[in-house]
Length: 330
Image (cartoon, rainbow, N blue to C red; front, side, top):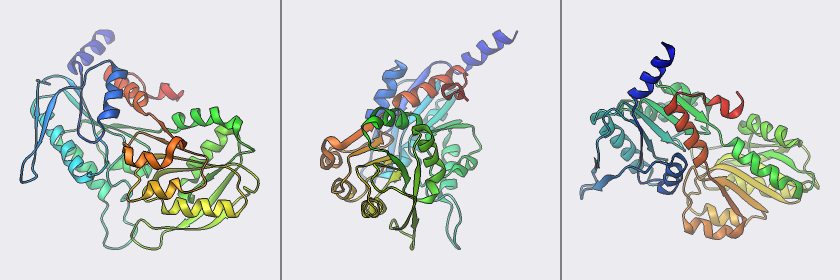
């Protein structure tokens, strides 16, 4: 009886149907290759009045649908694409719909930390659910409490294992490396890197003085003199705080510096600002696509690790009703 029940549950969701919006077609293609399924065809049309129209090329009735879309510019258009695609799938009677969001919209707006401000991440979660998502998958949220903004189940993944596996391959080339977090808010996650690499840690105290993207690096806590440094953070936007952090590390006697970050937002002239720094290597992922123009200043110092196999395996396990924690021995 239990076996037939499990088979019946899986049959309810039909086959995997994989869709993508306009934000990350290359990543979606890699996920499709991992799953060995084609990307489903759809039309996304923008009318002269800037309204977005979506049409599926085939029925998804009774199918297990996944929509891959990430918060890359233009972020509001890409958000609307995701919401409209989710509703389109719902109205076509999809059995289950999963929003696959490598980088979450408005993830920094996660709490009411001053008077008369919104919690926009909660609003985004509500919109995704109302549009029709039954589940969500995302990577390295800026703050863990965003998981609580959703009432539907989801998988919040981390790129830690992808990044650390690569760092272990280059660690033998480093001189007594020290892991440094770019601010105290990332200290707990930074400790995981240090523990896995079996290295000491240091921290940079960073304070944000205004309601904008600018922050000032103030103090280094720890010893990095005559050590190679691996500076880690969850995302880089304009790169301003990282410029200050690297200058601070160099002034304290750091040798070679390696910079690791999950989400390459790289707004404005961030690529040029970062590329001008004395960084040995930049290590990031493809949760957000990096344009050719933004890649060019880095030259061969930029290493992009793909999250496609991570997302693909989790999507497959969700489809088959298998544990995701087993992937990480949890």
